Length: 182
Image (tube, rainbow, N blue to C red; front, side):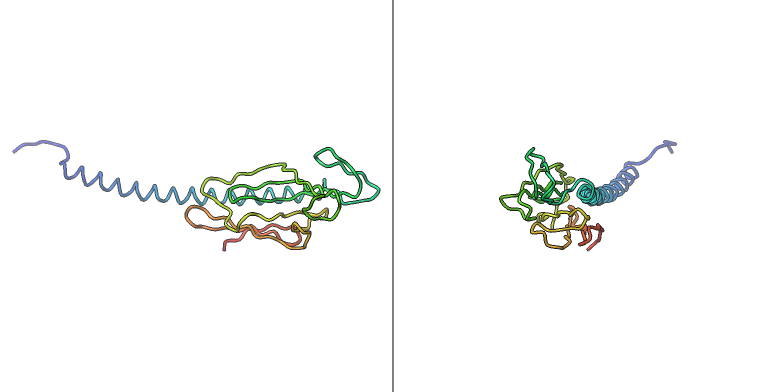
């Protein structure tokens, strides 16, 4: 009879197999957690940027006044101009905070309008804007949300992560921002 101490090969293989199963479950959980955190980050940054654009319109914005000379970011100046701020996206991976310089005072994106991008925000990897491009959300001097044709109306921007989880950012007519889970 030998008194050898140690583990048999079968015992070691069982332990390695159990560890592999535990690690596989852990890695899956971590990747789901990271996807949710990237989605939360995108939503929180967008909310902060919307509130920043709204605050800039309230504090820096100027509405047309025939007696007031307004200078746009391109250095041109004149009377009867509107300078306001908003957000817009031309794709599903980023968006811009912009200055809306309405040189002819009609509150529409037309030949008399210039848009100066002040900040571009790229979404975290794996997060996309699934509601399509963000249509122009412009805030007036009172902080009310307007569309690109100066119509009253809030917007809903929906994000999706790689796992299919969704969150929506809702901008109401009065400029307030809320987050919903559809």
